[in-house]
Image (spheres, rainbow, N blue to C red):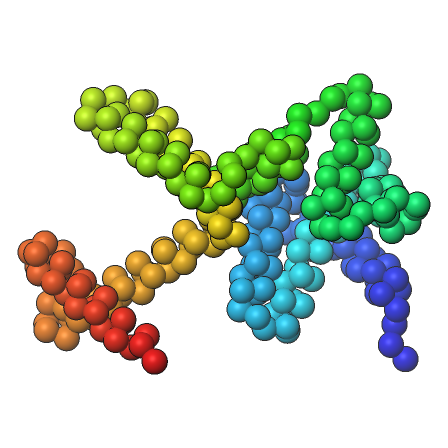
Length: 269
């Protein structure tokens, strides 16, 4: 007979308690919140990679690893009597029910946009009741990758109608920021260059968002394309008995262009 998710979850909590117990694993027993931070981030990114690959078994495993990190952090809190898994689950369930009154109450929304606006409005009221008013763009962690954080901040601003009309309008801002970055480069002032490049990048994220493109994924795609073409250039030079770094710049450029042309030919139907 297959065990229920609830029973299996209880078993997972028991496994975690045993790993942290007196006769448990030396590695697990010495971990702290700080030491676990890199693993939490790593597991989250492995989940994202599994989603991109599109392999269900891989995604299943990575989601389990991410869940284990949640269980681990909760166990650490329980050990110092801060909160337990019951508290985490109760708070999560309550939040989901309260913030979906169109599902669990009498409210009504017709579109995903209306649902998000209602969610933000409820969060705002909750913050005001606790005496901690929040900005409309609060709630985006500083630890997010910069492009993703920029897109999330811009999305929150757009929900209160502070936004460009469309991607073409936002592109004009990109051109303006690029001109300012070029002027900063001409001065050689590092701080000014840093600021203007940041503005240009932020503006590019706006264009991506308004084009329904994930800026983080777009840059990852560009990085992967560069990596692939660089490897192709290395292979091309190796076939000639040469190596990168040991040939003139113009020869590397020719090999690079040859690799690009070969890749485009292969991509044609």
